[in-house]
Length: 153
Image (cartoon, rainbow, N blue to C red; front, side, top):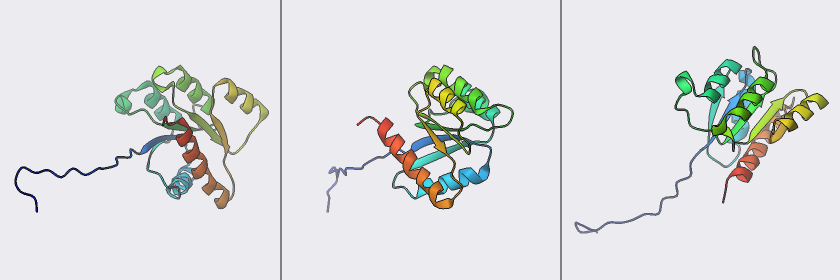
């Protein structure tokens, strides 16, 4: 029993959640992505933006996103409506506050033109959206590994 004035210090490990920004107009893909991430042993916060317009506001820190925290990883779908994934990638690369954030692209198609463009835009990795559930679950490990590689020791 402790008497008055004594303190017990406990070592508490504080592990912050990795913030993952997902720019994707298909809710089903985001649901599967979240499920895949939940199978991995790490804490994360998924920030989902449904449109290119929301993504541009986030990147430019406008409106509701004026005080948004910088994500640890950005995942962009190439096939968005109104604004393309390419538009979003150009905007990300011109935003100095996002300079050190790894950016991945995911898409159901992969063309040589896309690969060349993505390399030019400094995309960290291209992730092909799989058609099967088992392959989709592997994306969680890919993202966890990317986050681990980008976090300083």
